[in-house]
Image (cartoon, rainbow, N blue to C red; front, side, top):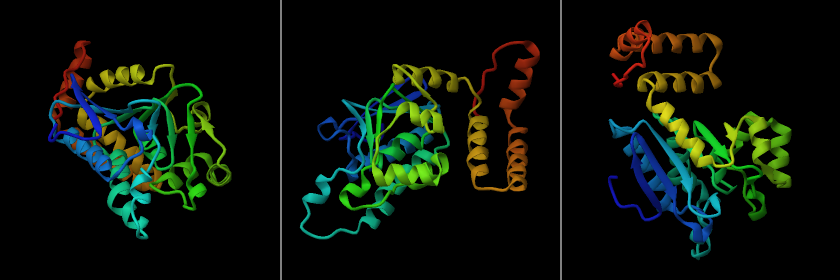
Length: 261
């Protein structure tokens, strides 16, 4: 790791970077430093030639409960929360969503506030049965933020999302799996995340990257724009050594050995 983190536990196991949010005393609520450390971990993931994906999880009873309000109550002055979003939260959730290498969240406990996007903006998300997901923004006089408005409106629809954010009824793992916000409900999310990481390690990295880019782009693009992006991807991938290796391995009936170029 490029630096010694204060709020994360980080280890590399084979081709997987495992990042644990380590602030159990505040239920893994994030202060400015913690957010920055997660972003730096994702940057390190991108720079590594050995790492193929990242598992993000938490220590203790919570995965992430959003903003550490101690940063708010310790200040005597009114604060520009829009600036906090622009400089801290939005870079974090964009780093998760836009990562060129897959990010898997192994949700180990309660998720609340902006932690919803940290948990659910990933590429794969697993949570235990009956895990609680709570909004809570308007209980302190705020609105949904950090991309939660987008995620929940797109998946739940306007009326159900409005109910979630205004009435503050708890959603559970089974609800989010039904809406497509979780990949699966699993008794041990970390074990399932590790299994996925091993599968990802065997894939062609550039293929993985382009599939993700095409699907994310398709969410906001027309059919014809998506076709154009697919042409760009296949043109790029068709010239790679991994494509040649994939075809050769298919013909020879063996497992391909992808290199990432």
